[in-house]
Image 1 (tube, helix red, strand yellow):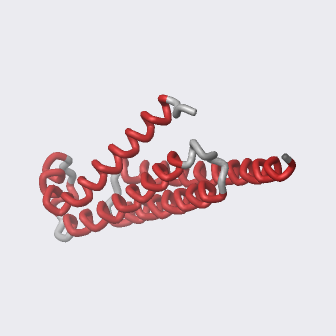
Image 2 (cartoon, rainbow, N blue to C red):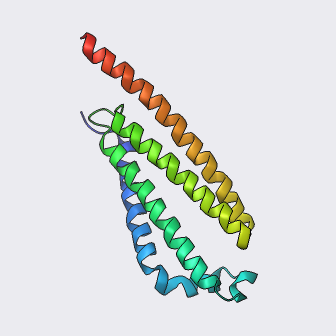
Length: 152
């Protein structure tokens, strides 16, 4: 069966996001000063902010790359059947990563609060809860599929 166009486009977008994200992460130590000059805020003048921001962004980027990689793996499973326990575990990992990102962003607000950081922290909570909900739905679908396979 031919893969639907939407799935192929989504796979291409996920590969592009992963590649660009990896490039961004690797070059971040060299390009952070440029980014800080583009997006200036009052924290740029505080000593140690650049180091804090570099560590924060690398940790965040690695988690985002991991989420993207899990999504790529899930997309690869679609032709064979997406309702598997492996996809349930992947969605649970994605949910945990979103909640860790949320804690990271909300924790950053303790020292350096910005509206965008606060907003991202709360959006990641929603993303984590959505991933857990989807994992529960796929878990139930996998159970139904296994029962159906046994009755045939």
